Length: 610
Ligand code: ADP
Ligand code: MG
Picture (tube, rainbow, N blue to C red):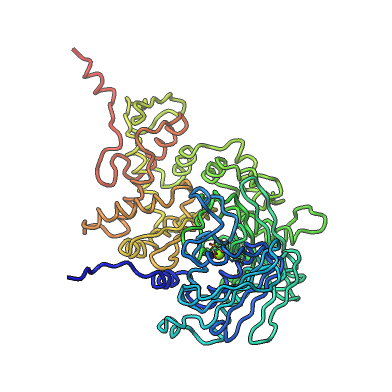
């Protein structure tokens, strides 16, 4: 009996792999251009016919290949760029997976001509169906020329999937532009059906930006430039007047690699908030340079998606850098920080960091970058009356819980409850970081800190859902990715959450972005908080006697309450008791557990009587 498992011949395996790397002519263009860049070319020409369907050729003046390399280059996993796995974390070249040429040779008729400076003659290699069909010496200039004809000639199904020439050409122009923007020092030329389309001399980043965007941008670009030990950001954003109704002219590069990132796009859009219409898109060309070990570019075959070691910090940085640039462009020549009215409206200027954000950032070396006087966040306004001064935020920053409790105590109707009347100057004792022992007018009380706080928050949220609650815009909006069923659940809760201060937006399929959190909730673990909330909510769901809102409020209160095991200072304990005494029903939690137990004098006397 014949065996049923067999190994796929190379050319078929390559064709399958090619499906990931080479989806259309533009993908081949990208790979070939990047190879030319990696070969340190200073001039790169792209020639295409019929939108790349019949011919794609890239000619470079880079370092070329030896005869042997020229033949090996097309083997699967053939690369000169990495050799041990650690190299993956230090990549400074565009390519490294050794898949592009193998993929291209699997789906097109390929001809390579190449010569190194040290060789007198070059070599010409032709391939079809992944096989070398001829090799011969050839007279050639230093550098490499690779041409691929009849893309997908041997995979008709793929060929049929290609779009019209104009659509495929558009993709090619996009890829070409991205590489050209990433490497402005290189001369780029594009020829389509015998006509020169682009001819971009090498120059500065600004010059390349103008070549790509058009001369009209000469006076419409705002330069972005921030440098810290962790990363550098540079490039340009279009002045607000260049914003468009469509997403075009938006480029983001990390270590000179074009990447797609809805998250970072959001950071930039956020920086433009209030400056451009809500339904329009800012144009930008931004470059981030960061130690290669801080990013993972190997998360996607086309390398257009990457993972940052810490994307929140990148987000914050991008946003701050763009804001700073925008603020500067409208600053009067005297540089006296009197900003124009639009800029003054920006959240980042209106609001100092919350302590959570400070805690978060201060742990990072980037912190420095944000605390410099001329950062947009820290531009002091002349009319600061009534606003918390940013300086005092750093010098007398309350701890999270103090702040939390002090704030909550100012809410709610005041209703005197004798048993909770603790003298202001009484010394309170915290026992096992869970119980607070406090003297009262008529005896003593033992308060359960967590349950008491739960009651305080419960009433607060209850009242808040009748009148919208204060929100703090997150400096680090967080993306939440949920299962389909959780996404449906959260979708239903968005409105109620908004009432208590959570600003959450749907963001693609099953994804949400947390834009703002209740003003008195610590920033930083909002993602966790929402996930926990969903979990609790699911457990609660079976309970039909409560409305959705009631369930939500109960979950929130439970989750946000300070926990048993947490150290509290005198001020915090007094604050908590005061807040509790202001509650409508101070003595139990919403679910009926006691929040405190009272021992009045009579009872104590009786205990000690003979
Ligand atoms: P990768 O770029 O991931 O290494 P490729 O399949 O794109 O893989 O290329 C394989 C190898 O062929 C490269 O590592 C490089 O050594 C060589 N090569 C490809 N294109 C060129 C070029 N234009 N000039 C010089 N060498 C090249
Ligand atoms: Mg490559």
